[in-house]
Image (cartoon, rainbow, N blue to C red; front, side, top):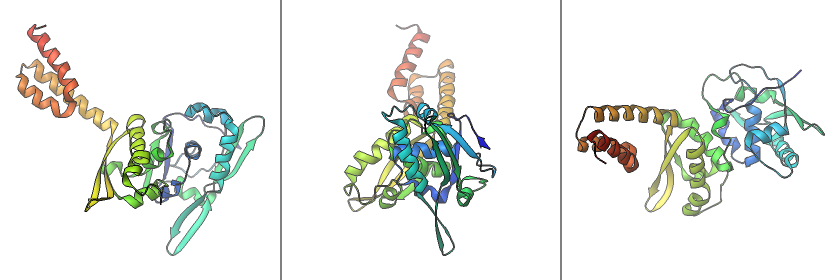
Length: 280
């Protein structure tokens, strides 16, 4: 029996941490299709149903406007279906495919898919060492590197930092042996990905280059969840308003506010203080 499931921004995607590196070579379209398929499954149980969706639903969810939608999605489906899933068990290294039975119905735009049985332990009945996030966090990404970097950062989000060698980062982003100059890697891959993550996802991130002599050899990413940041800001705003209402001096207020909110917020606070004094 084929099943359908309504996919929205709150749909959850989950996978074992040890296969995150296998997504390094996905294109933007493949990344979207990969996430959209996984969003149909409940990673908490072991039920591996065959699901059905449509190219129209995929297109509308991600807000894409391909000139030939089916041609693009079909190519992504074929490549994704044949892309190897790699994992180790002791001395054995396994190669398999992520999904099986991917079917397209001409004329209707319907697609059917199912997780490969051997791949089930990486996506279903997950209890430990896995990464999960909501689909809405990545739906607006337009660059493949943004999705790959986000997935790796999410793995380390609870630790609030990720210290990674530059070569390892390039491998995880699928740009090994490309951009030998760090400035080019930063300009064309790293900074655009960080910008999209900060603008569209549920994470806030910055990074500090790690150097040996004068050469960048790694990066230390600092990671925060926007929900945590907003909660802290709300608490600080409450405390700030409380101090203003209690009539504390302006210098003390400014010293308290400035590190967190910056000059624009200080201007707003000054206006509020002036209104309390009756000044223009």
